[in-house]
Length: 313
Image (cartoon, rainbow, N blue to C red; front, side):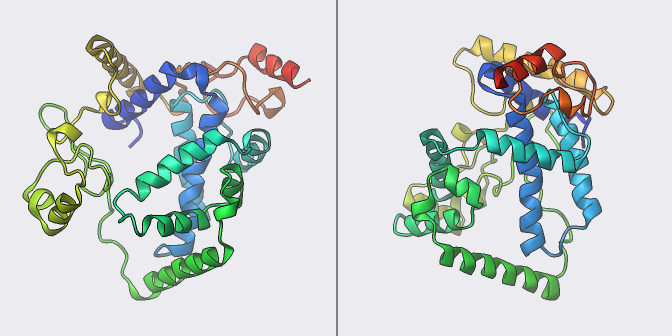
């Protein structure tokens, strides 16, 4: 839950990383990503989940992501979901455009998703992934020549059929499928379930099953990675998760900053905004958008909003 030690450490780790590269990251971009992570699951759950989400559940998801956004240091966050939708439209109109960089990043993500697929099936798997992407994402990544509308209709129909089967012939889950650990050991290290990173099993504790079980033996024959100490199988602390800095001294300083911000975050009320060093000028937000949600500390200043307006002129 928000305000717990684990959630505070995770958010502080993200903020430390964003601050390190803050001259390349805009607060409005992070807010747009918050919309994507919040809204993306809604359409898929409603299409193929055990049941469609109720409006109050979607609103609850927004309240959660709104709070995450300010705790990640977004310099402007809207009060209402309708405002976020308007922001998204304006952001995409200004920022979403085809580029080689988009394609390189998206290709890397698709390659990771298809990593364990046999080479023979990887081209078809790629076509299936592209087929279910939103139209604006296909356009911005230059995937239009690879897009197959017939395949899209078939895949979405199959997914809807799966949803129908779940809703009418399956019981709800008896317990949630948790992707992140809820407890740490005495040394404050955590391990992740096998299914969190199925392609590259980072931070998964080696067991007899994931080393010598049927699927593990198949992975061994194919040269796929297995849980090991090299991939963090001995556990990881939240403040050090992710890519390590080249210098051990810098790494230790970074982890200390994470713990310091986490301790501060744990005792803050809702609406507290972290001090993350994003780019100073906004992409979309100006004075007409209002103050938004959260404390005024570390929010956009009048000078920053005016600078954006001058650039627009």
